[in-house]
Image (cartoon, rainbow, N blue to C red; front, top):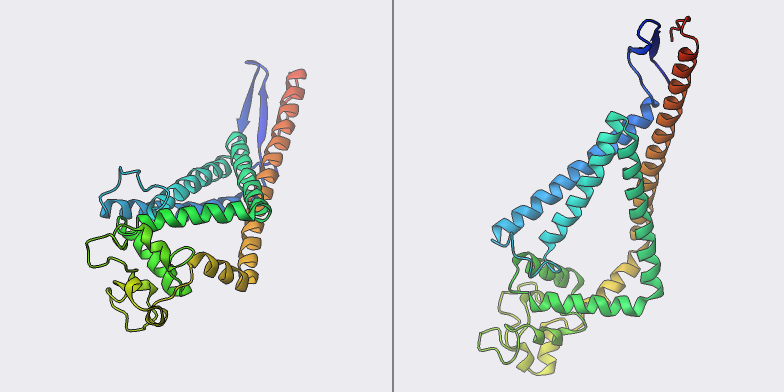
Length: 288
């Protein structure tokens, strides 16, 4: 584990350190290095896509829709990943205990946070449901104000075959689809609520003024929150497998960083002991 020569100069009373010093096992150091390189690349992609989307919408400095804008979420997630990966990357290459300890602490914190969020989501299911409903309503209100959010809602409604949060009536919260709106989409819903495969952008317009039988045959009336819950229950094994793999990935990073820190400390203590012995015997010159 150690490859270092330490000489003691009896005339000057100083230590002369020659050669190279590899404090850690090769696989530990470079596995941690590669993990952080991978996370670093992913974080740069997230930040780049997020910034590009905000610039395209001319909303780089606008924080009014920060809680519903997918681009902002990408930037925040990418920035956090970038900082953590940077600490692990530099800490592994430089064999720096301070950076590695900070990296270890942050990864453990994220791991525990994910567990706490999962437990709270199960224990406080009703509160989580109400919070999700509030976020969905905010997204519905901002549907026409943010192109990324609009595309995301259309994608969810199309794939889950749903409309609105609780039901199609939720689109009454949007000023463009509200029945008091003077526009052509008044008393309507977005095209992504329509059942027809040949749907057009106006297939949901004025739909709430149509007879209920026609409404049922034209659009989906069920909300996306219940549809999402059903989808999660149907794909629970896949979601659970992904969560398990992510947890293993984080635990592996924790193991590597902790092992590397312990190896650095062990070698540092060994070198300090050797130097102390040579200082205690200045007439002897030792070669390691």
